[in-house]
Image 1: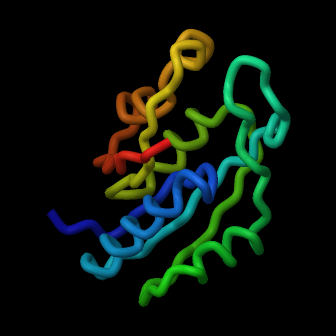
Image 2 (image 1 turned 120 degrees about the horizontal axis):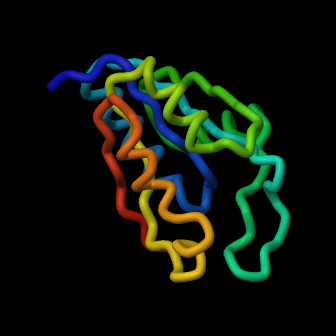
Image 3 (image 1 turned 45 degrees about the horizontal axis):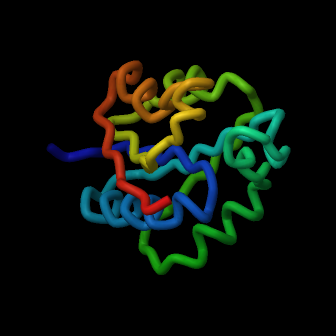
Length: 137
């Protein structure tokens, strides 16, 4: 299948850098367009006693710098949203795309109890194809 519009759900450089590289490669091979979507949660950056600290609240310039670290021949559009409704934002935005690329990492038992698996919720709720890239962390 040929993909024309690809979106990456980008959470954090430490976890999604390799995912971004995959998305850029797939975009280039398909001659597609790529949009990097980052959701800035209202809780971003605050520590948590039971889960890992929530992601950094990125600016467009920071995300552009991350994109520019990776050699590529594709244009990457960057979209920032600020909401605590991360699942809903990803599902809504994905309606415009053929493929969603996202990372997957194992959630701790406590994380699964408290919020479940966002990856699984996204996969179960989007209409486009989803490519999950396994992460080490």
